[in-house]
Amino acid sequence: GESVGLHLPTLSVQEGDNSIINCAYSNSASDYFIWYKQESGKGPQFIIDIRSNMDKRQGQRVTVLLNKTVKHLSLQIAATQPGDSAVYFCAENDEGGKLIFGQGTELSVKP
Amino acid sequence: ETGVTQTPRHLVMGMTNKKSLKCEQHLGHNAMYWYKQSAKKPLELMFVYSLEERVENNSVPSRFSPECPNSSHLFLHLHTLQPEDSALYLCASSQDTRDGYTFGSGTRLTVV
Image (cartoon, rainbow over all chains, first blue to last red; front, top):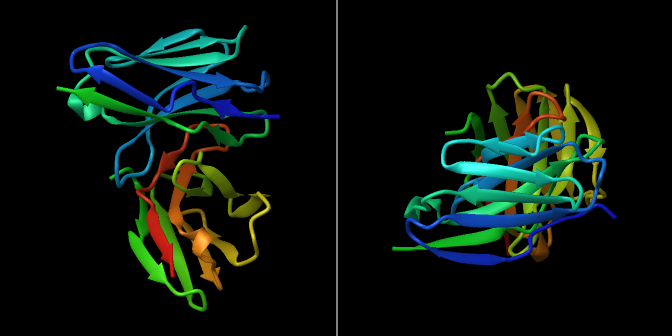
């Protein structure tokens, strides 16, 4: 069935290091993918998106990679900062227009 | 502020109470959504409204009743809830159902 899942529920990195958060999806018909960041007490906040006709997209300190062959999505955060500590969700927008979320990865940044 | 405002931020209600959650967006979006977020679970889509018409109802119990009077406002009416309904209820909007969503900060609901 349709599912979006994350490989690791928690990730701890040193401040200044790069972070990589991974996501696997199962619906090959999904054509739009989004990463969200959710801080404590707040709703999910859009970080970056990518459509299926691309395999890489860069933002400010963030890069999303899409590998459609193995149905894998990753979020790379460069020079991770304490303010990056949050739960990160990947989401896929399937052909029906629904946004399906993964379980989330909690990123902790050690000073 | 994201442009999607939810009230109240916190709500405690008894199982026999009736309450409503409110969501408001002034982003000019045409689609609005209710999600439920429980601890250790992915966000669960509850309802989708596109151009004020309900287009998705994900097998949600009838004790949750949505209302979308116009494209800027969305309500979730609650009655005779159960303790397991305690969760963070998130509202979101998007220009179209095929676009990314903008979320509100949520209503933290506790059913006692």
